[in-house]
Length: 183
Image 1 (cartoon, rainbow, N blue to C red):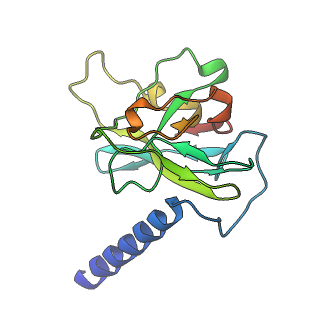
Image 2 (cartoon, one colour):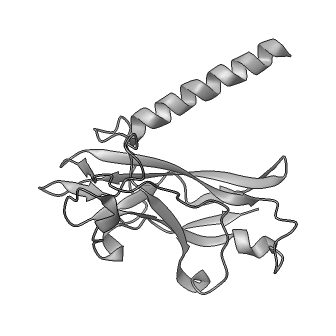
């Protein structure tokens, strides 16, 4: 039992280190064909929420590759952050439905923007789903966690000494392909 737990811990640490290394600006090792022309591409078009201890969860990996001739900037949450801040939103016919995700950014101020050089990429991994919310009013409904979504990166039109002052480009220049989250 302890041996298995240590193996799982080692795997988790290795996976976390790999994800952190992938979130830094740099050439991506593996390239998959894009789902569409969106500047941010996810690793799948469908994600299934899996039941865990007191939660439903799925992990989305999204990649932004700078295909332009100049650098692209992104808002960062704190000094050690190598990747951009991001959000998840509904899209298409689902865009006006209620959506719930149980995390939010809690950032420090005065963090300069990051940079993605031409040809380089940034990778973010984010969780969709939620912990169980027994005290939530109105109650959390299963439909609040699923549907057609997009990842939206906090990209900036110019470098800033404080990411809080980031001026975002148009939504289409910082959004992912649409993907579906279901049970």
